[in-house]
Image (cartoon, rainbow, N blue to C red):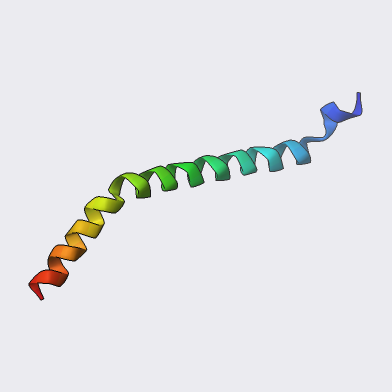
Length: 48
C-alpha cells in the first residue's frame, strides 16, 4: 500500500484544515463584533 508512505500530501491537508479553521474563527469573530465596532465608530463620528 503506497498511500501509507505519502506523508507530504498528508501534511498539506493538515495545513489546509488548520487554515480553514482559522478562517472560520475570524469570520465568526467579525460577524459577532461587527455591529459593536460599527456603533463605536458611528458614535465617534457623530461626536466629531
